[in-house]
Length: 237
Image: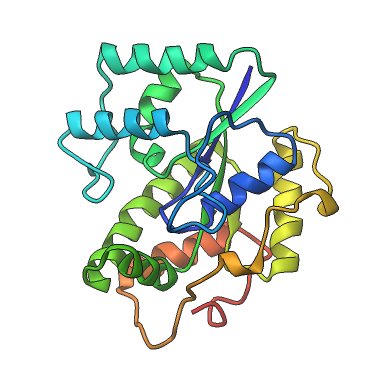
């Protein structure tokens, strides 16, 4: 069984990307199809999400306060992961998406060393505003969280060399980029078959009226440089 993990920060287009990859032939299993904060559901497997939360908690973290590095997995959590994989072992290709994976990937690499990846990112201001609309809190706090997640995304992209797609791309370019990335994963997409994408999924945008801290801006620019073609960065703010 080929296993594909969709990596990216919360509110960064990972749900959309996962739905499009499902259109291209990726099996997801029993994922969430309805969610108050996602028009078409977040496409997350509840057992994977719960497992990752448990691993984070064991490492004195959570999705809101992730550890600065990766997480150590204990035997019980690794056993749960092996059970999840066994449940999907009848599939030729299976994938999952959970933003927490950026901090819990160590267990997956131990059990599935040949796992493949694709990543998604979005402008920091758009993510921060989306998180404020979802749960409140200061924008500065969410920008810092964006930096922690996307710094890890760059770390793993350096290590494994997978494709990154930019959720700020124009719809036409975005769909073409996903088609290219899906083919690189061994899927068989066609542009007309990727029906999951909906312009209405983008409910927040970056804005020039929110200056980014230097370290956040640097990571965003680095992501843009790794995912081309992308909108001009000044147009996506």
